[in-house]
Image 1: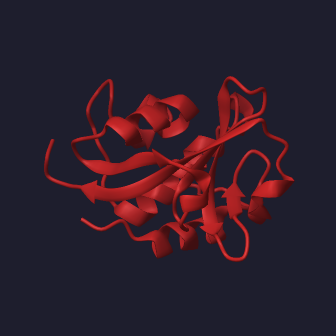
Image 2: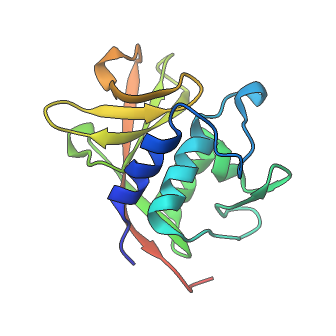
Length: 159
């Protein structure tokens, strides 16, 4: 299946400065950034992975995969996923396309923030929750390291 980057970006545009009531707001529970990025990815792929320990899904705040709302768990899922849902490759930041995931490390060792690339010309712009933003230039973030998870596609019917 094809990942619909336009749908992911359109979702980000709609909900970057608000909260979709269909999902829990994790702002008071450590941050809502990766939850929001997962919502954007889901808007672009329409397929969840319900594998109990290593999947990527959300049905309620109490029934969700760690990858749905955890920065490092999302990275591991996207890079390793061979079953249902989106999959990605970690590539240099200059390869970003709208709809790709950017993760930031503010201390140089632990990645703790997820964003969605929404535009790349003339500069990389992102959408995010926790510090709500849409079309924020990546250069305005104060980070030590950044990594790009380039969404390569979507699988369905493999679980």
